[in-house]
Length: 287
Length: 329
Image (cartoon, rainbow over all chains, first blue to last red; front, top):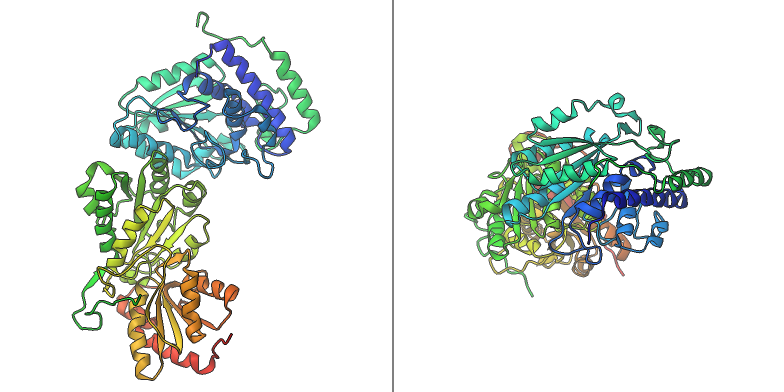
């Protein structure tokens, strides 16, 4: 799949946000804030970073992308549809009986998903297991395993078991994202269960840490490029994002974590997103 | 085909070996037969007999430390990468501690990860109740996609390990710490999903799983001395049940006693009772742990205390059949 330019990816991120609103309002339930906040990262992944073939989801030489915080899967479904894994019309079946687009992702239902997730905290281990086989068992050096985690799910002990494991084995083909949007269901992350010093925590587990603006496409791409160049330890990219990004009445508000917009709210949200079309500025002139 | 017992089984010098040792040998053999087989352990490598595999295939062995949630989820990721991962720990910890990870990332995700729960049941003895896993059969057999196996002796554990390496499915196997008598033979059949009639009988059918089966062979002998003709059915695969063999075996006498060293609630006896209640309702007595935890002690004393020696089982069967009518179709 050809890589898109940064302005094209920004446009894709906006398309993905609109897809998310349409999916959620049709489904009548689901999570709004996280998926909207992660749209830029997913656009960068599916249209630039990942070495994948949408028409051949199980292509043996592909990069692996695992979603640990499965409740944010609308953003992955939207990115996959935009990338051509399946028809965009199917997005509107989200959460319906018989749909391949389950409320939380199920690998066996939809080609292109690498795992099944929803219960939090287990994605990093699976990505680490995959990366371990490449590094120590199969001598594969040119493929990478990406995993997306939410920040709230870092409350889970399983995450830190995996962090210790990946640190011990210096899994350099493992590249983790933390969607650092500072919210979880019961409130702000630092009120519910403080995560800071988050950078220091990962570093003390033997990881290379990069902190970025998770809405800056160039920063996202550059961070993964740096991560692939680090050959003696795993990398975590702490992506600072705005929950609900792009829809002003949802932004920064933890109450939008686990709810879908109603039809009136969706209309306003889509209008706002549409008027931003072509107006998104980006850094990194000349790229 | 009649199941041929180990000719030495009833002799005093019958060979004793723990089922976990059979697993260790089987895993090494599975590794030799299929290079996709890999092994992961949570700091109990020798206890669970994975050291044989580790020594033979160091590159394919992974130490994850005392982290059972990580154990099975790393294995799930390896399965996605094309491996056949065997994970081992004590059953109290795996699947005891990491059940949800198994449910989501192995069973629902349908990856061929093998969960080996060693030191299950009251054979774990002196370590006490915390380590005597009694709920694992119930926990694992309710999980869709999951195969559940409790081999009867170390020879069968070896065969079961080889079979599960090739079955392509999420699979749980429960193993015991202590040495138990080998009742099968090198050429005895083992197939996942099959039950085996070890002795035919028409007065009562004794159904056993795991390392309780050998006790039932002795129980049947005691009962024979009292003129009671007991059938002994060995059911090493608890899920899926070999329905045809179990129903045929139950029908011969029309009343069934199940025996397990696990909680009777939700366990092997429950599985048999559910089947019979659906297909061939008849009286069933379930022997095992009756809604209580174990405690520290020599396994011999614990089996006495919990009424699970061959002699105790014979007494309970004798009493029960006095007052229990047979099923007649």
